[in-house]
Length: 84
Image (tube, rainbow, N blue to C red; front, side, top):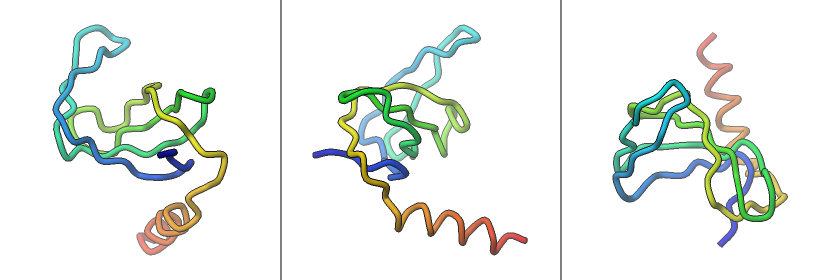
């Protein structure tokens, strides 16, 4: 299954990631991330949206479709607009 750009993903298992500043962070089951860029056919860049890794970016092994997840992106835009 391919993931679309802009799609939100939810992690199913706990895992550790290395951070550029040194050390590790635990990404827990249920933490969320959004696919922001297709690096190549088998790699995507994600931004963590929740948990200890919130705000950090990482390249992970995911097949990314070239199509956008328009519904998810539109929902995010409307959420941001309603904050104002």
